[in-house]
Image (cartoon, rainbow over all chains, first blue to last red; front, side, top):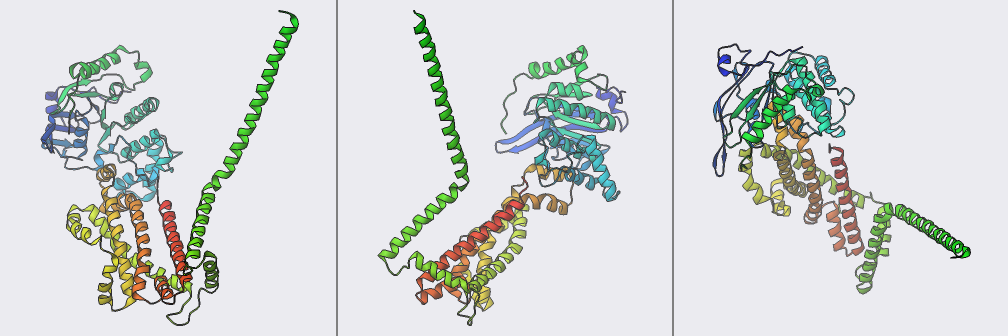
Length: 285
Length: 293
């Protein structure tokens, strides 16, 4: 059942391997923002290599620049220094090959849930497929996130959890090389969040897609990730530690709640966040 | 303690209980009745209060009439209005036409000037909102011209078009264009960054960005601009027609002043108010139709 090969943590082993092994490559990335009080270094010396099919989470205290890093991978911002390479090509701007699930779902309120997803489908596949195929594609992905029944409702007519499902559907429908998730479940209540996490696990297993997710939820990170990238506090945040989560897939939250291995991973992350990076210095932008 | 006293004590307690129960029931009924009255009256309350206010206005008007006979009484004015509206569409040459024709001519001018302003103002607003360069270029001229009374443009209109009617339309055009340009530009610049990010991540074409994101996101702002415009346009047309003459409610008002028919001036004021109100309400209804929340 384990569709993912155990992740490699040593960057030197990855260095000489194939494109598959270095699907997403972040090299010596530094991000500086211009502010009124002079330059603000958000990220410094970021090096990371992500394999195809790997699920990575970025975790850290708020203000540590994890969303900044995700925006860099998305291409929404460009790094001040260093390179980001995805599938052998330098990331020069945003595009559907790196679809983003935004924290606040960001659905267009004047389009129905279906139309929101269709907009992305149309953009990616319109030149190779006809309208019926595009429609079928959209319906398939709506079914995948369990929204067949309410797909023609307007975003304001569905619950917060359902809106986030549409957001995920929109990103998945574009069949991205890398799926980027920016605290996708942050705004949801605990039960809905658990529910959506379970579904995301299933979807990711069936699609075997590469994903980078920003979160501040330790359980979410351990449950979903192949590797957890823990970031130090900003300013000039860098990657503190990388933890490989070698739990069998498919993962079941109830069974794992009693697993010592799970608890060890959890403790390791908490130890990093609250002891090593205990008191985040408040940052001003 | 003897038995009789205890019994009477129990009876007393029972009486007390019954009494309080009856009181409670009465009170409940009273409250229920009050609730019913309140519930029945609530929907009519604004109308009732409005009618009361209007009644007070009429009394005030009557009082003025009693002090100054030049101002006609409400009753006399109403009778004149009824007479006037029995034949609104007569035509005895260009200077003597029914009130219906006058209203219609004014509305036609407003529609033309207003429509032209929308055709020019909304695209310009989009350009200003979308491109910083354009905004910086146009800001000084817009800020300079916006506070100018549209009537100040009337002579320029007369000079350019050599006729009264297009000059009046020109005034409407000038006064309507600013709210449309400014509101559209504000709407475009206020589009949430999230929507822009979607456009960027999906890598949408400029046309798709316009039709799926810019236009729908800006529409509520645009309609606010349109609503503000129609209000000023209707204000300005009366003044412009007073100056240019011809057929129109503003000219008619001025003509009745020359004829010293004060009741007709008051009727004209009411007609202008009612038409303005209707225009505004039409646009609010349209705005509601296009709001997506």
